[in-house]
Image 1 (spheres, rainbow, N blue to C red):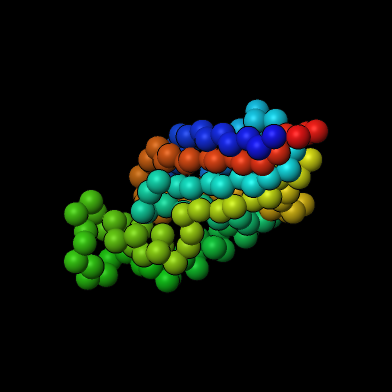
Image 2 (cartoon, helix red, strand yellow):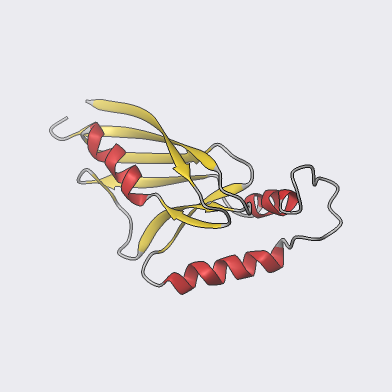
Length: 143
């Protein structure tokens, strides 16, 4: 039998940086009973991103943040700065990353690699509550 379940998660960020949401998404998947399928994850914002990245060495995330700060720096002559100097850089960062990811489900679990985790990457300086829509579709065991 095919199952489709959708849940919305609220993710609290503490400002620019990464929040690992792998466990929260895995709990949604586990609660569906889906054995084989797909988990689509979508971030409903334009100044944050979803990324699958290494979860073992925190230096990877620090290096990504430093690289992105050089790519989309604050303090430039951006026309769109209504919400402060981090406003347009947040949109630029979002434009060159992703707002969605699709992860296979195998054996009732997210089929991520050993060192992979799913993160919300906050691009703004201040804390935000970000909405993440998780849609699970697939077959249940024996279905």
